[in-house]
Structures are given as C-alpha cells and as structure tokens.
Length: 293
Image (cartoon, rainbow, N blue to C red; front, side, top):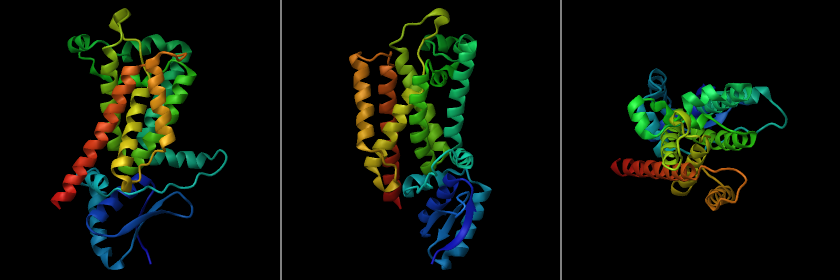
C-alpha cells in the first residue's frame, strides 16, 4: 500500500523531489490526484516516512540546490503525463503552462515578437535582436544578440512549425529534468546555432545578419531527447524513429536547396550536434556518479 508524502501543483517539482528520494534509497512514485490539479509523492514503505519528511523539509527550504538536479539526471524515470482531454480545456492549458513555465515563456515571447512584427514593428525589433558578426559584437558588447534571433520568425509557417516542436520537445525535457536543464539547453543551443549561421550570412544594413527562428534550438532539443532516449532509456525521454527520420530528412533537404523556403542549414546542424553532445555529456556524468557511489 502506498503512503502519501506531499503534493505539488507542478509535476516537474514533484518528480525532482521523488528522484532525490530514490537516490537516498527511499522507494516512491508520483501520481496525479483524481482532480488532475496536483501531483502526489507516494512512499512504498511507511517505515521510511520520517526520513522522507526530513528530506522534504530540506527540499522545500532550498529547492534550487544542485543536488536535486543531479539526482534527476541519475535517477530520472518516465514522467507519466495526465491523459489529454478532448476539446478545448482552459484549465488543462493553464495547468500545463504551470508545469512547464520555461517552455511557455519562450513560446509566449516568440508569439509576442511575431505579433508586434505584424503590427509594423519588425524594423525596431530586428535592430535590437538580430545577430551581428562576432567582430562587431566584440566591439559593442551586445551579447544578447547571440540569443535574439531565436525569437524572430518571418512567416506563419515558420513560427507554427518551430513552436509546435518546441512546445512538445521542450516540455518533455522540462517535465523530466526541470526548468534549469531546459534553460541550459536553450541558451547553449541558441548561442551555438546563431554563431554557426553567422559565419555563412552576409551582413546587411547596420551590420545585421538577416536570419532568425527557433529552429536551431528545435534541432537541439530533438537531438537531446533522441540521444538520451538511446543512451538512457530508463529516464523515459523517448522520441519515435519516424519523427527523428523526418527531422533529419528535412535537414538534408535544406542542404539540397530544393525547398521553397530559405533554410538556416548551419544553425540547424549546429543545434542538432549541440543537443546530442549535451545529452551524451549528461549521460556520462550520470554514469560517473553511479560508479563513485
């Protein structure tokens, strides 16, 4: 019989604590309530309740302690999501936004930037967010431009394609490992993909490099989920082979230059490599921690 320990509104937080409890040899699981608005940590053995409560109190006082994220990498298991209700469900959308705040934040920023662009504000937005050559950035120190292009999209198809993948794959990472991990993947992959594309793009007025989109990051989160699914299947981050195949074919078609849109091929490739490398490094760190225990 399972014994409830504590409930959280955010699924990722519940799994973060549960994974740390497992690292302390406390068997437990996470289950949604009947109402679906909270996630309860259930202990398998009531005799471990006292130790579990002490750990929970420490977690509540310092939830951002790196040791909890480390446990998520080492002991992370599959996140069982609530079944999606058919139809438009405002409550479900709100709860999903709470469970994946960073995924929702990036999604919202991209939508707002695109919306303001449609209202005639593309020029001032581009002036402040588009990438510039690294030599120019070294002089003006506007290093936020390493991330800026990720928020700019040039068409409805462009933004819809990117945000569909981001909201799916980004949420997978955030639910399994927390917002800090997704933020790390986003920042590293956005900077890497934009730097790579900068070497293949000629500057226009004001030394601006006219490329943008979240697709470099999308390829990174795809590579991250794909490789962790292969290296650490017990962590529960799975990606169907058909999706991986589609994304890789799309990448190849971009290099073949037969599509009706201009593709930021260097950004896509750099993003994919970045995501795969980050997944491999995390897997390697987890193995080393296991070996040292």
